[in-house]
Amino acid sequence: MDKKRRDAMNSWLSLRRSEEGLDLSLDVLYSQIRSCMAKVKYAWLENRRHKDELRIFSNWVNKFGFRLREHSRCELQDLLQNAEGKVRDVDEAVTLYVGLVSQGQEKSRDAAAILDKMREEKRAVIGKVAMSIRYSSKEIKHTGVDVLSYDDISLHQL
Image (cartoon, rainbow, N blue to C red; front, side, top):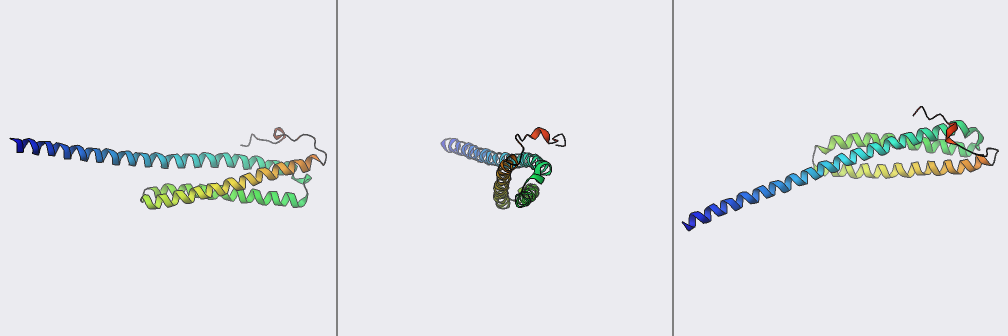
């Protein structure tokens, strides 16, 4: 009787252990799925915001750029083109990341690292554009414009 009781108890414990292992595996998988979805969501939202900002910056350059020194205007236009390229690159990287997520953890981890690096580079370029616009605003103010306002730029195109 004791042997049967021990056997029943051991089979119950082994069944319980396998359920705990399954629960843990499902929890880890669910966590990975949520993290992938969050990465895609926030990369997309950030990229959309950066596209809108670049549109505003481009409109600003189109409206006030003729008042800048040629060197400043060309530098600003080059920065804008570089930033727009970075935004397109991040869009492509998000698409690739989504495609690689289903192909295994190692590939998705590498793709996530590359996506994060590209987003950091894009943020740096966008920051340079904003700083350049701020500097250029001072340059324009000294040539006769007292107040610069984004109200003058048509934002309804956004």
